[in-house]
Length: 352
Image 1 (tube, rainbow, N blue to C red):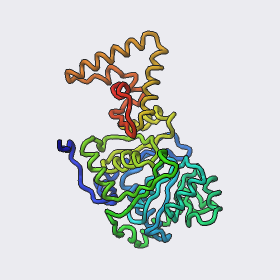
Image 2 (cartoon, helix red, strand yellow):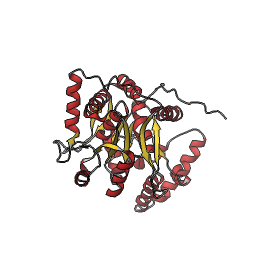
Image 3 (cartoon, rainbow, N blue to C red):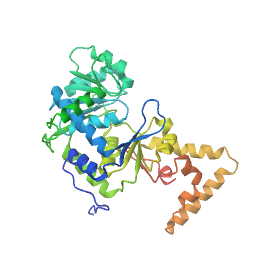
Image 4 (cartoon, helix red, strand yellow):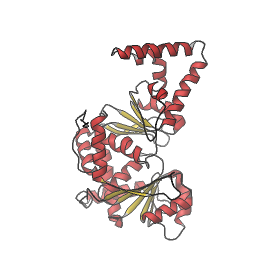
């Protein structure tokens, strides 16, 4: 049986092609919704701004002598992580995403194994990275994603970005004009959990882009969607589906503040799509039934609504949002698609 595409996708050769075409098509549309220090609401960052920041970051990294080098990324999901990732792979070197939950000795081990020359880390890991920087023979540069000023052990993301903008204004086109090897290694991943020693996996632009186009030809994600990013970006599952796919299709990415904040962030961002693993959706499913159990007769009404909904859907009638309005409202009121992966989900949960 042939896989027949359900949706049209635009061809891309590499991730630079992806971001350039998306910035051209979606320009002033929000690529990200972010929360800054002291601000509770999500603020938009446009596709155009995102591309400019990637170009500036990439230009600065190249000027620092990191062209062709391996650069590690570690920290929670953030706009700075996204900018750094594409700045690395789109003309600087090879991205090495690391798990922020790893113990210090394993971080050192993976930095050594990957032969990383720089480490870009989140502010929440500052003390840990300061200790790490005191060890001999780790990396040449430490870049703090969240610090406003250069930290004791290295540079701030802001200072590197500002340097990149200054270089661009001065006519530096080294990053913009750099050649990308579509079949060469652009990302080095380390597996986790299955063996004592993590395995290194090499990915190229060609492989990643083929994955993006194939996935989007079978599952509709569009420029009217807002995606709540929950899973860690160092996992290729979230990086490909929750980050690169969304940029490719012109949707908006909002970063979740933590698992316990999912309902709140769904409402605040007006998210329409969320990617997760079975445990997340099974927990949400149990919570719905637990809440219903607290109200007299609510479980009986919920079971009846499920039966009615299932019958109507056989007839091609979808009244799920009307029948389950309180539940939809508790999940932000805009969600249209939950995607579960990485393991099998209980059919009872997926069916609802």
